[in-house]
Each structure stands twice: as C-alpha cells, then as structure tokens.
Length: 268
Image 1 (cartoon, rainbow, N blue to C red):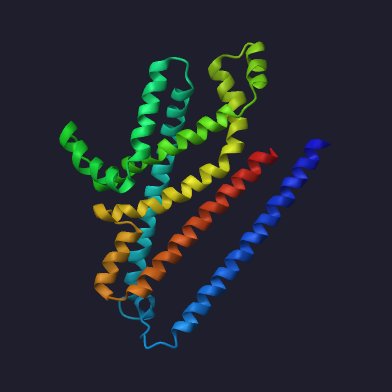
Image 2 (cartoon, rainbow, N blue to C red):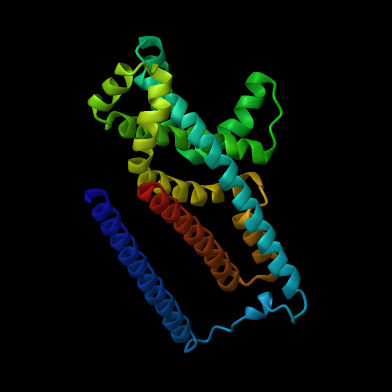
C-alpha cells in the first residue's frame, strides 16, 4: 500500500511539474512574441526571407542550419556516452580500496575539473597530437575534450549517488553470497541511478550547450553554421534567433526524454 501511495504521489508530482513547465514555456514564447512585436516599432528592416523556403536561397539556408543541428546532436550523443562511461570508471576508482587507484582518480578529477573547457579543446587539438604523434580531427578533439572535462563532474555525481546507498543493503548482498561486482551491478547502481538522474540530466544539458565551443575548431555544428550563414546573408538577428530556437528545441527534447526515463525508472 505504501508503494502504491508513493507511485501515485510521484505521478501527481510529475504531472504537475510537467504542466508547470509547459505553462512556463508558453509564457516564454509569449514574451518572445511581445519583444518581436515591440521591435516592429523600430527602423530595423526585417529579413526573415533568409529562412523563407520560397525566397531565393531560403531552402539552402534552412538545410545549412539543419545540418549544423545534426552535427550538434552527434557531438552531444557521442560525448554524453563517453562522459558516462569515463565518469563511472573514475568514480569507482575513487571508491576503490587500493590507494593508488584513489590517487589517480583524485589527480584526474582535479586536473580536468579545473581547466576551462575552451582551453582544454585547444590543448587536445594542438598539444596532444604533438606530444603523442597522433592525428585528431576537429570532431574527435572536441568530443575528447568534452569527455575529459565533463566526466570529472559526472564522476562526483556517481560517487555521491553510490555513497548514498545504505550500508545495510550492501551487507545484505554480501550475506547472500554476492561478490563486490555483483553487489554494485544488482543492488547499488539500480538504486543510485534514480537519485542521480536529475543532476545527470542537468549535466547533459550543459554538455549540449558546451558543444557550441566546437565552432572554434571549425566543427560544422550549429554555432559554426550560424557564423557562416551570418557572413553570407549578413542578417545576424534572424540567423542567431533561428539558432537559439534550434538549441531550445533540442534541449527541451533532451529534457523531456530524461523526465520520461526518470518516471519509468522510479515507478518500476
């Protein structure tokens, strides 16, 4: 009965939060429309023909921005997967008993958490190939830099989530003959992941926005394509507004996917 009440309470909370988010989004869109309507009183000459599929070049401009959105999505998904894997491994090293593993994880954490991502991107792209004799494309360097930087933050999320599990659950798993790896996989992580989903979702949104720094390496993502289109059409307001809307839709979709996963994970 308690579990059913908890499920109903969570469903009610999730639905109310979803309604609040939709109302907030609606108010935000209304605010944008009011701002755009107010801008109509100025002497600015609107140039939305840049994205008019009927106007000359409009269809090509839309396809150019959509190709940038596709690259941004590819960078985000690839870096997100790598970040989760590396972050979990570093967290397990921090929680391991041998002190050399703890020391390596602590050094990794302090280095990559305190180097700005913009600096790290250039370091990975220019310094690592010279030191190791490797050849990295701009896409590979961007993904690697994001993984190194964001995994240092994800590591702490995993570590805190794993450490929050009651010691009694772990001891009960040991008492029935489970090994340390089995206990982590079957007992600890399934419980911890429910608590870690909200901060992991926030980290995923930050990661998606950080992918825009790839424009500095000429990665043909959304930000880079917007810069290119601005130099071609010289309509900065329209181009960057269109780019902002694409980012907004992408991040809203990501947020809704995480909420759906969170709801399914908690209720099951």
